[in-house]
Image (tube, rainbow over the protein chains, first blue to last red):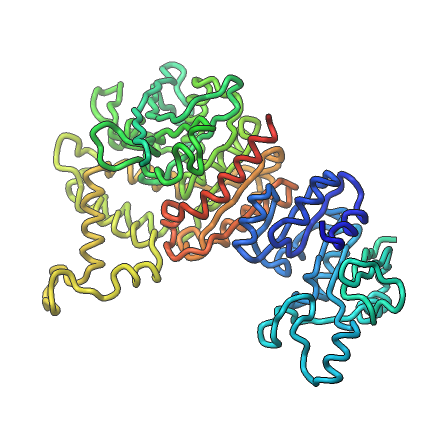
Length: 195
Length: 377
């Protein structure tokens, strides 16, 4: 299994209620269901991916998370997962705010645009690197409308008094311990606003 | 080559006086006959039964062939061996609604009190009454709990009514292209249809059996209805401004355009297979449908349905029962903590998509049913 999925699996407790925002083909929820016996649900806007999730036995809502999340009641879920989706969301502020309200813990992972390769690419070539986040998108194709770095995210949490319960930094499949904003390609956080 | 699946309509009669069915209106109806068909085999534990509910003009003949017929049942692309509702695995039941004209008791049936067809003496029925009648059939078949109730349009309304009226009798539900209540625009179209029938002199206050029926009115009602089942895009694709068997405009009021010819054909052929009074009664039942009625809100209506698993399906171009109304259902279910999956299928077919988009529906419905069935085994 993907290393980031394994880390997410280890962050959540057995039998918990999990909502996956932008659940894609349902692979992560199916994995958590199998490993942790979670009661899971996904939100996904792409119809084909919704069908793939259904084929995996996942409960899924086809629609826009920014539209439905505000209607969910407080603490309806134990965990909300935003796996490599945060940078694609139109209004990440709104989604994070409501996620922290709707779930006790929010697990966020995102590609780190502070990684040294990104920095050097821009510095040396003066162009936006085509492979941020592991995909070969050009600037006009990329769905990443809100690229962010590990430092950006941690500053954001500090400003909003969001508590970081746990942080993991990955460079490809290996954990990074030194200067993560420079060496990690992916940050994975568990955050909360509960006391 | 696919094997031809032959099926026969069966009949079950119940609610014999003095034990008539008490209707929502307070009136009584009995005896009641339901025409129904079954497909596949009921397993030993009776846990594999699926009830399919039909729409306004549907009937019990959901799939397969009647001997001598050239056309299969109305949802044959979805029901049968290896299909979405796989009759190799599941026992599928479909019955004609009360008020209908395809073998179940309706306004064209003989009124035992007079020995003549009911006509307007037939009591006004509701979606809830249709479901209550179906429950007798399910009891008779010895099924304690249905694996699934499924249907589109008015069939979807019956699905929702089942989950509210008999939550303990249903494991899962698939309401398709439907709504929890009929709204103004939907009532408006139905009223145009009814007025077309009632303004036809042959209607004769519903007393036309054995005489010339109000075919003109019924055909116009069907034409209006048919427009609402399509979409602007699908009509443009299907007909455009193409002329019917002529090179230039006729400059008269005969048929010029393909779309006119199509609607005329749909209207006239409908009169061959449907009873005008049934059209009045069934559209009225649809108009009266409001699931929240008597509960205060839709949320409260579903408050006892928490053990049921839902798959709600809508279609992007359906403007008669648009995705927004399916989402209303989903919201009310979610607010009750009910397990609900929602899929909005991209389609240009309009409301008719539930009968036509077999591939995508098959993919999600067969998966959904497989997991529901696995859970109980």
